[in-house]
Image 1 (cartoon, helix red, strand yellow):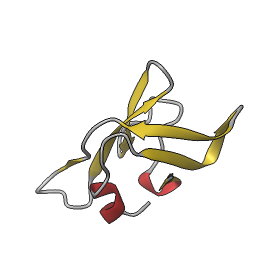
Image 2 (cartoon, one colour):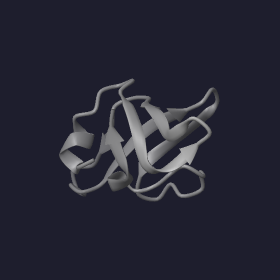
Image 3 (cartoon, one colour):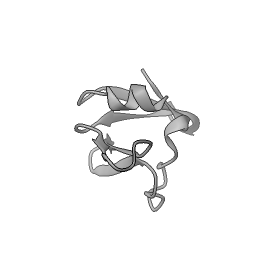
Image 4 (cartoon, rainbow, N blue to C red):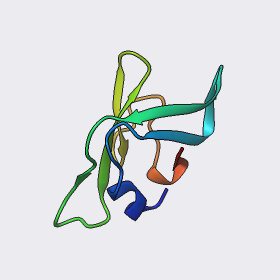
Length: 78
């Protein structure tokens, strides 16, 4: 997914990881809100996402404590 595609995401769109899998296949998450962008850092973005019943995380830079978090390039829009 490119940066311009990520900025145009709407809430509850589905994203799919390109390499990580679970028992059902590739990992799918739902976008859980509007992507966060900054005026001073044009190339930075954070996308809130939901995985499963209780797992919430952000796709983008700096959120590496979750097992399925990864850079923006590893995701695609389904």
